[in-house]
Image (cartoon, rainbow, N blue to C red):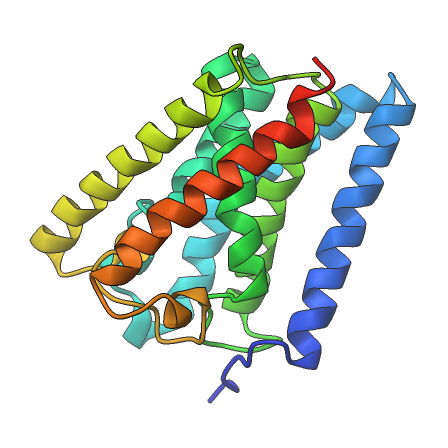
Length: 228
């Protein structure tokens, strides 16, 4: 029986540290070398495309957890990973926009308080951090190496991303109702300790989601809009 994952444990901190270092090295090499940039782009696109497949392999090692929630690619990070790969390969502004806002606002929080059950060295442990750091790398590559910037006026891009994430929440409500799943954590809080535990009971924490998302999207806009 694999050990249960513990937030802020040694394994958690080490995985987060290694992920940050790898992402930083990729981005630094892409910014410093025009020759390395296409290779880093291709690497991140490959990682985001394969993250879901690797996650499926990892979940296949846990028979009692092979549920609709772990099979279907309807978690926000699953969708963001596919968006990130498309944004890196096609450089479409709408995909870059969603990857930047969703990839950083949601995925960074997931790294801090992972919705993860099994500890190192279980395959789901590696899959989780592989998946999420691939998204973070892509989301940072877009403004740092592709020079993407939010549309003007300044509120247009974060407002679109906010509207789209609410569209996702409505989609998650429907899927959860039909299948008894918990995509987007809109049905209930995850079993692991997380930020949601401090936002009140369901459905009050869904309102807090809105406020936090709006604030994070605005901060992310300020972080890059000054360089337009």
